[in-house]
Image (cartoon, rainbow, N blue to C red):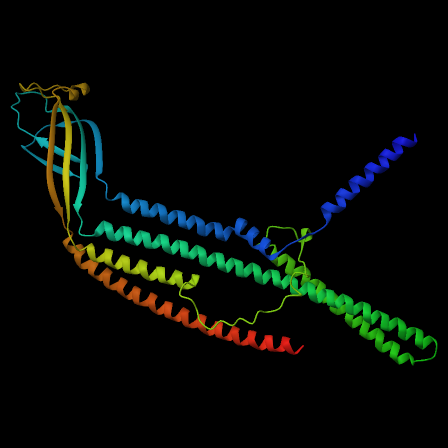
Length: 389
């Protein structure tokens, strides 16, 4: 009876040790918080999807270089009056007609028709190239937007993390202050009971103690709130993590001061890509005023219910009889003359957009320089204050 109880007690101790270890909050470093946010934050995944979308759009623009092939099949019934000639009546089909002498027969018959037509833009005067350049610029902008959002997310996690660190540091300080004031209160009570100090000192110490307890509760609430805020970007439960103070309280600023904004700044890169997109679209709009020269080619098979001797069949399968195959090749020029004026207006609009984007770039660069100079001045002053303490 004794041995099973010993085994049971040992098992309970082992399980309780595992449970206690599992419930212990893990220390969350800043680098780990960054990585967890990068891996799971939906906003960053959205930017990645936008890159994929722009890459597909680029492939669509490049596909316009390929010949456009269209096909059709039809079996119809109707009248058969017509004239001679061969032409492209609509994109995707071409037609060949000839007169045939028909005797007094039914006025309707069935027809079968199938055709394949290819339209290859040989000379577009830069239309496709400019469209591809605009698509490439959009890809670069999507990548720059991703980098900028990546940096913004990193900055957001850093602010949230150091907010937790700041509140925890103050909570630790408040807790130590509570212990110190409590000792003073207990000492004041002892001295008052011994008649060595007046009771008013004890009341003052008690009032201070209650005030310090209130400050501790305040910092405890702010600490809990900041941890909840951090869970927006870091996928952890509030009770599952803590921030280590030892990694930061012993560090000190290196004294580096920055007074210039690099042109490679992610936000400036996004604006620069917007300028490139506007310029590429402006060039594409200008090329729309020019014509397009295409190589046309087609092959068709046609059946009719009218035989060569003029006999007309009116059953539905008669359209597959008397087959005639034809081909047609040619060169076509398409020029939207009215659209030339519209494209000119569109080009002017995009020129204004380019100027607006350039002004926006200059404004953002100026604001960044101002903010950086202000932050550098504050940092310099704080370093001086830290040196005096």
